[in-house]
Length: 113
Image (cartoon, rainbow, N blue to C red; front, top):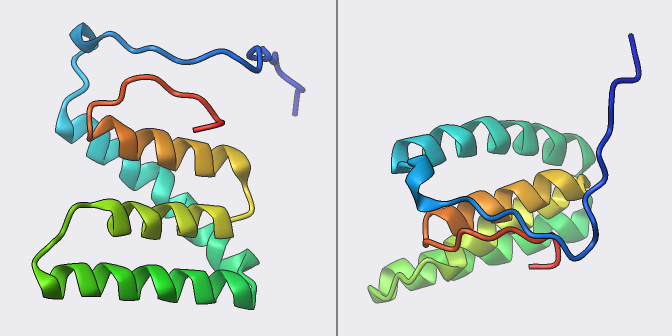
């Protein structure tokens, strides 16, 4: 298999996607399904006890939010980002964060976010 071509993004670069590119909720959901399925698989293979504990804490926080009727999305986001972190792949974690933020209207992407 060939090595391919690689383009390195400058560390301070962001990915700005103009709204006229038609980023629909369906597009975002399809992308999340693709990325998060791989992320879940990697998390299942690479998990460690502290990662599982962090994931349980995120689920408990989410459940408490729902029980109180105060769902704001932060605990749901925390769950997905924790799962991505457990995967051990920083790029997958960045994609999960980016795709989550797409649904809130944040259209810039930076791995430091």
